[in-house]
Length: 124
Image (cartoon, rainbow, N blue to C red; front, side, top):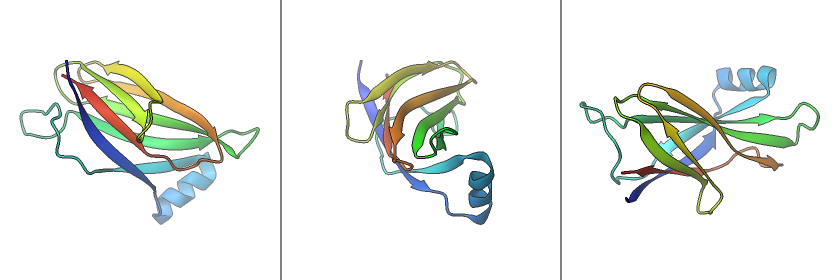
């Protein structure tokens, strides 16, 4: 089996509504940008099957420690296996999302690192 890579670069969401939400809920929304033309699972309309969203959440006891959470939604009729890694590292989490389901994962917990980048490798 071979893996294809989709590099997603996450940026802080700077829209006013997102800032207001982050201040009230301790979540910092992350937005991914697709900079890859590599093979991915696609639906009949040609859109990628996996929809990936990410956020960092601060701890209540220590607001300088952040959980890096990723939510993956499979919009296709087949289960998809994948590996999520911090960008250009070997720190990875393997998972599988069933057809038309959502999977929530914690990629890591890091002090002082509010924003993060990651890669997703789909298994074919």
